[in-house]
Amino acid sequence: MVLALTLAASALFPGDLPEAEKVRRLAPYFSPPPGGTFALDATEIRDLERKAKPLRLRGFITVKPPKGACFLVQKGLDQEDVEVCKERRIPFTLEDSDRDGKLRWQVKTGDGDFGTPLVWSSPYRLAMVVPFDAKPDDPMEYRFVTGCDA
Image (cartoon, rainbow, N blue to C red):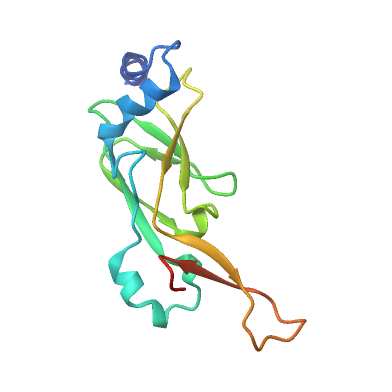
């Protein structure tokens, strides 16, 4: 079984394959595809008033590796890696994206693969807001921006 996974991984990514080609070959196994735009879960955005922390709003990337292969998804240094061998929705939070609203994951397809960076854009941006009536010791608030309105 391990040999089959290694062979499948090496068939996907020869060692000298350029990064752009690796991303292109991985794209069909992700929804939305890398280079595309992710969205937060519409239900969670609708219920934002009940959420204490907007940065905890979730979205999902669906990963469906080819039959007989597994992907190792590295979401970040402070998060556990996720092994995906069959179709799976992987959650992320707005907090996982950077200030430019981009979500960045590293995906490994097997032994000898050091990983391919995958990036999704979004319409969201993080803003650090100081309310007009804040006292000097009050902490800044984090808000997400989806346009001209916070």
